[in-house]
Length: 257
Length: 257
DNA sequence: GCTGAATGTTCCTGATAATGGAACATAGAT
DNA sequence: ATCTATGTTCCATTATCAGGAACATTCAGC
Image (cartoon, rainbow over all chains, first blue to last red; front, side, top):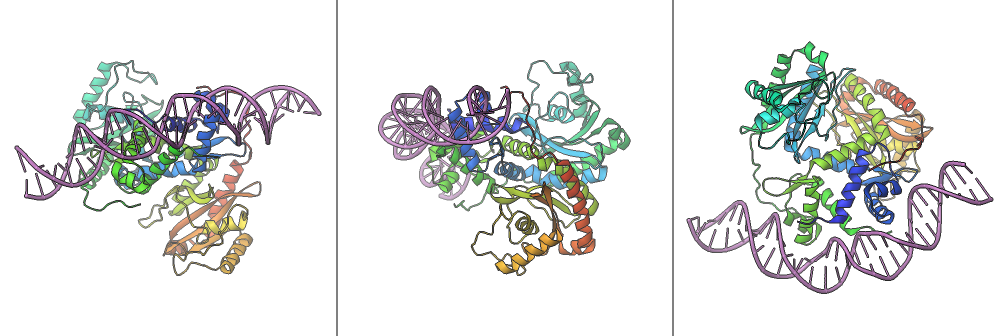
């Protein structure tokens, strides 16, 4: 059960650079991760040689083209993302607001893909970003439809906005309502002024993700919550149909170099 | 100047999984990369523990959420991508065809970002994908405006389609024309039936990338090449304006853990 | 339900390959 | 022009990883 420390350190470096909004130098990274400068330099050089990182003219490091390519290849490999993408784009174009797909990955609820709306004022979630469970529409859906894979984690629930429900009772009630109605909403509970409406995507009765529309609260009112639910449900239904084969059988055929 | 072999192997693994269109098991990967099964397993386990890879129900490995997140964070970090994105989306929405941004990264000409068109038939380049220099509009622009960073690499030029120009003389002529006119086109030279029109993005007179519209050849005719050039130029000009500060100064402020 | 052939996982030892301190080089600032 | 902070290289020391082999698990065929 032991990890390779070298690889672990490399991953730490990538995460750190991913979080930072500016390129960082060897010394800064070494200090941040508490590694010797020479080791850090060697790791960075190895990653840079493969294009995973790049150096700017000041020799500082930032994420490279190869890393971007790997990530996006990974995205397309995800069957639910591949199947959902056209539906996202259609729904976003029709409704004019941002529509996104979320699911559980690595124990976190993350944005898997999105299609942005056309308005000047529009929600722009980050693909790959983790979102809180208790303060989002998709989180409540997850709690309602897949309680076995999500949990609020006992700890205190942060109040992102005045509208955030932070007591377990309150959230329980919302989750029960979501289970009953088959959709959930979030009215400025995470980000002030942003409302979200979400519907589940089920595969053989199991929750595999959620489709959601995110917009300024006024935008959601303008469209009408029920109209949004209807439109998202139509998309979710089509996704579910194309998701039919639950366990993609593998026939013969070896993988060669 | 030596690399860390462990990290190198990890990267190889990621690339291999990124290329494969299906999840792969330990044995298959070990065979493909010619590594012992146990070492491969250790690498995979390390990567999986960090969420860079994920295992499906059959225990096979595929790219994970963390990898996707890292890649997309990287994308947004790229100043030119961040500045160009809204312009891509606007232009794509207005023209109804796919508009993308390309630039040199790691010695290759790659698609940095895109906004897809709305048509049923539309070009869908892969972000992160490398494109050939001699058979694309953006490649010819690169040769015209940044000859110092691109090269055709002496070797024989592959003929992707009957329309591909494979002699250096032919391409030179096209490049000169591109330099003169300030835009380039590609009429089915790479992918049959696909035409592309591209304009350069310059920063202080230096070529930093290209904006291009890609569509079925008929789609390009319908819009009119010159109309496309005009529209792309307008976008490129706005990008250039917002790109002004060439060397983003760094003030004080340390990076904490 | 059992047998057999895959595959995935763990264990362990030797040797390699990574570590990290320190010296050297380079570029920016005062 | 000097100083200081940062990036890069060197090298001995040893911790860490490689890889063979045993073990566990899953699946297919009988």
